[in-house]
Image (tube, rainbow, N blue to C red; front, side):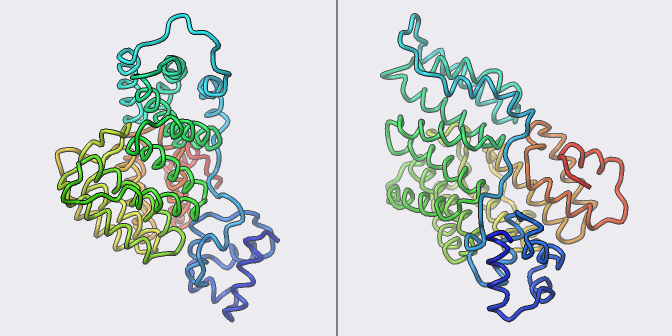
Length: 387
C-alpha cells in the first residue's frame, strides 16, 4: 500500500465512511479509491487527492506521497539536450570575444517572442547560443544575463524538465541585481514547485516574498504593484490547491487590489513575458473555481472576462482556455469541451502536448462519451492518453 493509500484509508475510517460513501461525497470512483487503498494504484492525480482531501477535511499535502506532475517526454529530452548541455558545462576559463549587452538583448527579444508564441522547438534551437553569449556578460550586462536565465527556466518548466529548470532559476536568483529582478525568479520557482506538488513550500516562499515586497499602494510604481500582485497570485494558487481556501481568498483579494490600483493589464518591466492586471487576476480566479470543484462558477466568471488593450501573457490565456475546457467537461458538455481543446491545440501545437490538464480533460470526455470521434482518438494519441 502506498503512503497516500494508507492515509486515505486511515482518514476514511476515522470519519466513519465506507469506500462507497467516500466516493459519493468526493466524486472519485469507488474503483479508484479501492485501488489506491490496496496499493494497486501507486500514484494518483493531484485533482483526485484534492477531492479526497476536501471530503476528508484534510489539506491536500497530507495525502501527497511524492510529486504528481509527470516529467518530460523522451522526444523533449532529445530536443533540449543541447540546452541542458550548455547549462551544465563548466564555465569557460578564458573568453576570446565576449558578447555585448546590446547584441544579446536583441537575440533575447526574438527568443522571448518565440516563448510567447509557444514555439518551443525554435526556442530550443536558439537558447544554447543565447545562453553561451549571456554567460560572457558582466557589469552592465548582468541584468540581461539574468533575463536569459529566467527565460530558459520558464521554458524548461513549461516542457516539464523540472530538475534542470530548478538549477537555472536558482542561478538567475543568485545573479539578480535588485528585489524586483529577483521576484521574477521567485515567481518561476514557486510555479515550478506547484507543478511538482510542493504546495507547502510554494505557499511559504511566495508569501514571504510578497510580504517583503508589499508596497504602499498610493506611492508604489506599476512595477512594484505588479511584482507584488504576481507573487500573491502564486501564493493563492498554492493555497487553493492545498485546501486552504481562506488563505487563497486573502491572497487573491490583495492581488485584486494591486490590479485595481494599476487599472489595466500591463507588460511587467522586470519579467520576461508575464503581464499583470485585472484580466490576469480574473483568469486565475476561474482556475481557483475549478480547483474548488465549481465548474459552473468557473464558466460564469469566464463569460464576464474584462478586456484591455494589453492582453495577459500567452501562457495565462492558454491555461485559461484549458480551464474553460475542463469546466465544460465536468458539466458533461463534452462537445463544447472538445471544441475548446481543439482550438487550443490548433493555436499552440507545440505547447499543447505537454499539458497535463489537457490530458485530464480529454480523459473526462472519453469516460463520459459512449463513442469517440476520429478527431478525439487523434488527440488522444497526441496527448499519449491510454484508452
